Image (cartoon, rainbow, N blue to C red; front, side):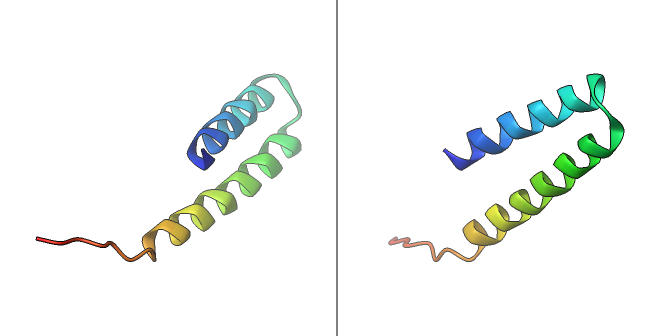
Length: 52
């Protein structure tokens, strides 16, 4: 679900970059970038329970 939210947020940021003011688009991009890195670190530190 969080990946869908990130995708929609990036889409909104691209629309703002296309039609809106540049500082708002850059701010949105920065916030989304932090959220993407936080999501990556959250999932990268999960332990995989594999049984072979």
